[in-house]
View 1: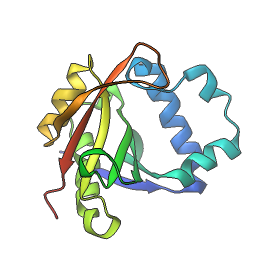
View 2: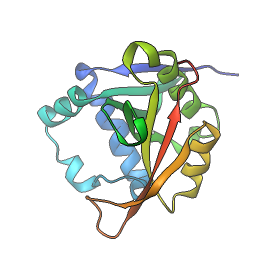
View 3: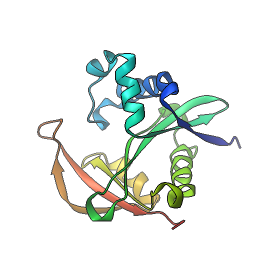
View 4: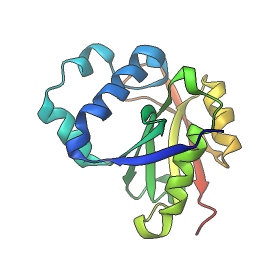
Amino acid sequence: MQRIIVEELREDNWTRYRDLRIAALENDGEAFGGNLEAERLFTESQWREKARQYIGLAALLDGIDIGVMTVENLTGDFGATCWVGSCWINPEFRKLGALRALFDYVDQNAKARDWAIQGLGVWVDNFDAIKAYEKLGFIQMGEKQESSRKAGMYYQRMIRKSPNT
């Protein structure tokens, strides 16, 4: 079995993050709050700014970027110490453990980076994602929330405590 590697994406890796984000929006745009047309027009400085806002993580298989997620430190609902966003795995590589590898990386760094209690939001009708997050130990918390970016859309907050803390 091939091993999935996780790397942090720094500001100088902005093209990798951009390419993964655009691929995510092209393939599964309905799963995200972002807008493909708008993000395609982002400048290098806008992508670099996004890279400074949070920690980007890329999942790689045989040197190829196959997935992405971001982690942002914050004080969130239900005790969250960080917010996980932009989770996406290339459909050709799903069910190989990339999502688990990304969260394993977060768990391995939970104490040092203050990622002990992880929060995320998922559209209430994205049942596959909800199931995947529940397999990783996330539980649904609170009432559904209306999106501030997509009118009429609702997301569910989910929380998970890192097993390494």
